Length: 371
Image 1 (cartoon, rainbow, N blue to C red):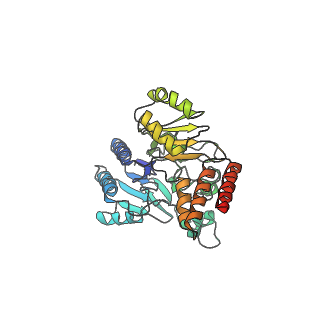
Image 2 (cartoon, one colour; image 1 turned 90 degrees about the horizontal axis):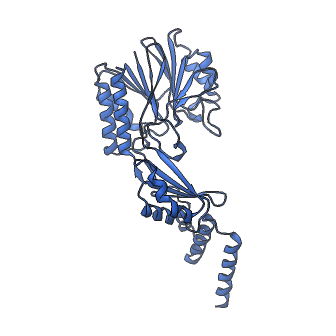
Image 3 (spheres, rainbow, N blue to C red; image 1 turned 90 degrees about the vertical axis):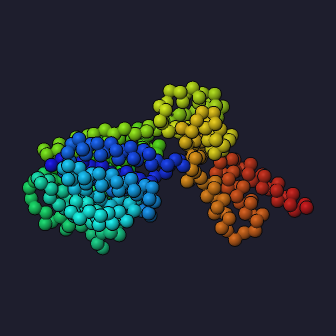
């Protein structure tokens, strides 16, 4: 039996105000081709099929359901095992009802199963409160897997990071010790959006990653899925996806002069981020200006001025200025005070010198007293 492993489809995702649906459908078509070419016996999806844990909408649920239906209808009649991720829409489980031979299995609890010569240990996404009181994850996994029979090729699939491989991660992570104790031959993890084997580890562990680059932290990521053959070899199958490209300039004058030429060397299907070291204009205005100068491939503009970069995209989900103004509107203050707070906050967030702001405020109040 050959096993195909993918993860983190994030169907329904929108980043920078861009609907990524066509990219997701292209990724699914590539994964289907791999499944067909290798005549797989099982597909394991390691969590985050959908981007939202709420109902994502018929326009994305339908094509994803059709993808799984096509997989189930392959001549090899593969099983589909879907691990619950931290993003997943909980309604996925209902898909089990739409086929009566039990080959679509939604995994929302720690378990194990045997597939031909493979013993497979499965770990959906777990939060600390999912663990029994007083138990660490290693102890909990041991209690769930202590009845697993010996022998066979031993695999572990998880929607979880491996211990000490993601700096600063404050989540439950998969203990490497449990993999050693269970004599697991190969481990593949979802959840972390990188693709490749984790080096310098005592046991072979891989991250499968997402089949598309979801944001600019994933700019240099390789895309791919894994096929595990009958001898437990892990075959790395590359996927194609739209590239992300960052262009950096000192200021808006240099960017305005050089941007068009720079973009000519960038792939036509790339998403482009422009970073400036400084600017007299806010990022939102620069985004509009640069898109007019070049084209809509520019989706993000960031200014590295001050301690925190000011970023603007076509969606601006983290537009701190807009969030500040919305917050002030909720406060129990008069309209004049609200306007002052909005103006001061916006100036600070856009990097204006605090002493200048103070002088402007002082002048404002002194004029008010004179009136």
